[in-house]
Length: 373
Ligand code: UD1
Ligand code: UDP
Image: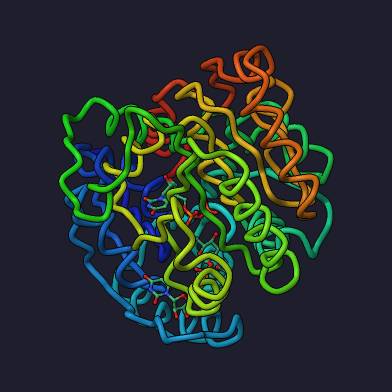
């Protein structure tokens, strides 16, 4: 009789949850797989929003989040919490996603327990260990612990090969974010939250903004927020909708520089369904988020990335994303180009999808079934 495969999926933050949800729900359907989910809850409210939408009930919840947590605290709490979970489940494989501290600590815990690791969204690199910080190193270290590498793009696969990872352990799958996005965009949704009621989607152009990266906190985030202020003051038909990350440091920056400015809406983080609908109603997206750089191109929305570099150059090459840096004047100049010049805007607003076809999760499941025994 064929042995059943025990899979333990570990994640902890909003983007991991969104991108792991299609995989977790796919694993649940498999007859030969016993699927367990452990959330670290490195994020709490922002994670729970996603669990609810995708109807995921974790088997284990480490509930580690604390206000203003440090990287060391996250790492150590995850390691300690997972010790017991891994001993109890005794999985054949542990799946982790991406580049967060949960990802790295999860793969390290798996290694300490001699359990195989499957790394979803493997092989993205900037080759600058401080940018994104600490994500570049989290992803690299996880890549060197992992036994199976699920690379979204050919470039990601080549990065891993260059680092000496055996080619037969790297699988080109596409990014599961596209699975989540395709599934979610199909759903009917009418904006019903009071937060969005006052926005004039008909007469105004909406710029959706998110900004939260650790390496942007401080001077760079000030520059970015001042640039947003300049843009909204210059263009009377622009409204900025900014769902502010719950990190108190980000909230403080945003409140200090943007609160009370007309046509700037600082709102609470939105659930995934409304954020996808908001993206599709926006004219332009300004962000330092990783996930949004992957989602917006397939919705045909131009993106300005407010970071110095990106580990996701595919959409830049395809022409729908531009790196705007972290200097106030440059961000204003690049946003103005897209607000003033219809040809430049149209050239960027094409739906391209370098990150996947919506079938990444199914591919990953088939690989697990073929490779893990
Ligand atoms: C984390 C990830 C980052 C990812 C981001 C996605 C690390 C080191 N960073 O960064 O890679 O891009 O998540 O959003 O893994 N908070 C809440 N409620 C929440 C979530 C956060 O109150 O639901 C607050 C807490 O005070 C927490 C702080 O935000 O201490 C920071 O959260 P943390 O996970 O440490 O860092 P992020 O910037 O969210
Ligand atoms: N997102 C969301 N609600 C929001 C802002 C973002 O659901 O208010 C989604 C977004 O569509 C994307 C993911 O969260 O799928 C990105 O997460 P985040 O920006 O927190 O992290 P990153 O992608 O930078 O790691």
